[in-house]
Length: 199
Image (cartoon, rainbow, N blue to C red; front, side, top):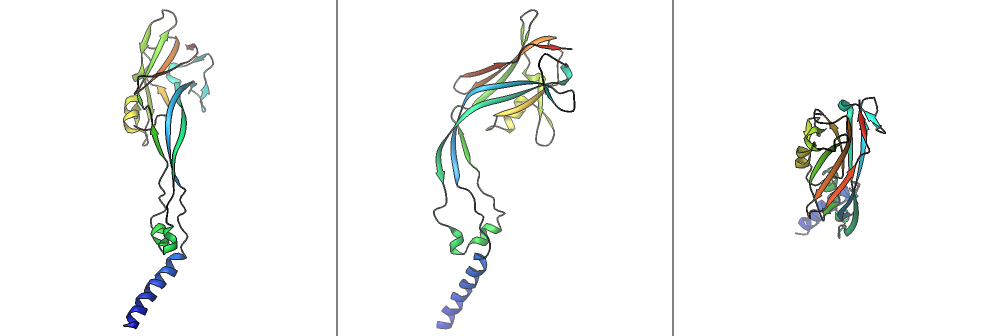
C-alpha cells in the first residue's frame, strides 16, 4: 500500500519537475477600454507616384485617395490578471503547448460608428453629389472592397483606413470632398478637404 502511494507521489513529482522547467507564457494582464469617438481627420493623397504625396492643390482623378482617421478617447475601465499562477502548480507545459495565445485587450464602443458618407461639392455650380460608392479599399486577401463591404467585415474597428477613388465620372474638375461619419446616437463627425483641382 505504501509503495502504491509512494509511486503515485513520485509520478506526480517527476511530472511537476519536468513541467516546471518549461518557461511560462507570461501574458500581460487583460485591460478593458471604453472608446468614445469625438472627431475626424481627413487627408487627400496623390497616389500617382511610387510613394503617396499629400495633395496641396491638384491631382489626377485616377490617382486620388483619402485617409479617413476617426479620433477617439480611451478610458480604461478594468484591469484583470490571473489570481493563481498555474505555472507554480506544475502546469507550465499546458501554456507551452498552447503557442502562448494571450488574450488581447477589449474595446467597448460607447457610441459605435453606424455609417459613412462621402460627398463632393462642385465649386463652379455649388452642386453636392454623394460619391461614397466611388471609393474602394482592399481587404485582407487583396480583394477590392467598397466602404460598405469594409464596414461589414470590420464591424468593430473603423478608426482609420485609406480609400482610393476608382470611379470619377461624376466628380467635377474643381472639388471639395466632405466625409461624414454617423454615430449610432445620431451624432455626425464631419471633415472636408481643401479645394482640389483635377487635371
